Image (cartoon, rainbow, N blue to C red; front, side, top):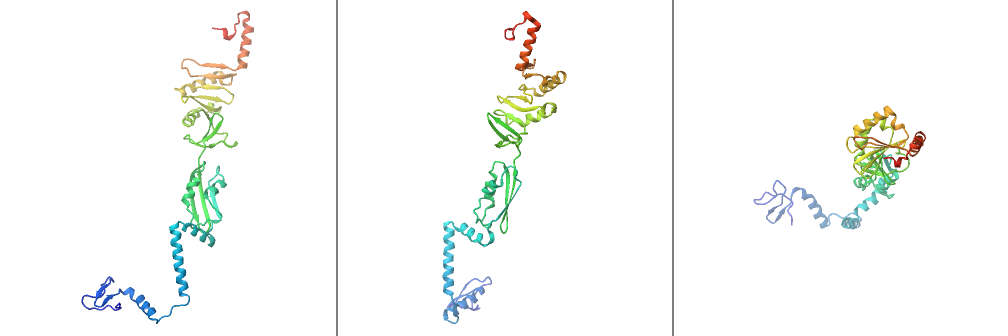
Length: 311
C-alpha cells in the first residue's frame, strides 16, 4: 500500500523538495502525485467506470505511437510530414523570383525542386539556396518561406566584363577573369573582346590602361594576348598595333603623336610594329604596296628594282 498523507512520524515523510521518503509500512508520495494516485486507485477498485471507447482510443494511441516510431527509425518522417501538411493548406503554390536578368525563371524553378505537393513546413530553404547558387549566372541567392504557401527567391547575378575568345569559342568573363557562361546571341557584343590563351586574367588591368587614351580606346575592336607576354591592338579599320612587353604607355603616347602629326592610323596600312625601342615598322596593305611599287616603277624607269631584290 501507498500512504497518501504526509505524516510527521520521525524518520519518515516527504522532504520540502517533494522526494519520496521511506516511512514505516511504505512510501509517502510527493504532493504532485497524490491526486493521480487516488484516481488510479478508485479506477482499479471499480469506483470509477472507464468512458466508452477507452480501449479503442488506447489501441489507436499505441498504434499511432508505434507508427511514428517506425517512421522515425526508417527515415520516413519528413515524407509523412510533407504529405500531411501539403494537404492541409501548406502546399507551395507560388514562387516569387527577383534579381534575375540572365537566369531564366524556369531554371530557378527547377533548382527549387517542387513536385506539386511540396509542403512549406518540411521544405529546406538552405538546400534550395545551394542548388540555385550553382547556376552559372548566379553569384548569391537567398530563399525565404512565407506562410502559408509562398517561397521568395532573390538572386544577385554576376556582372559580365568582357568577351574572351579562344579559337572559335567565345565566353563571357567577369572583371577578375572568371568565366561566366558561353556567349549566346548578340546581347553582350558591345563588351570588349579579349583574345588568346591567358588573356582573361590581365585583361581588366590592360583595358583600364588603354582607357586612359580615349582617342585610341574608342577605335579598338579587340585586345589580343601574345604568348602571355604582351598585347596587340586590333583597330576597327583592320590595323594591328604590336605593343612591346614593357613600356606600353610610352609606345601608345608615341603612336598617338604620330597619328596626330601624320594621320598614321588612317592610312592604308596593315600593321604598326612598336616592339623595338629604336625604330617603328609599318607594313602597308597589299593594295597600298602594289600601288607604291607601280609608282616607283613609273618614276624610276630602268633603275627600278622590285622590292624583294632590293638590299
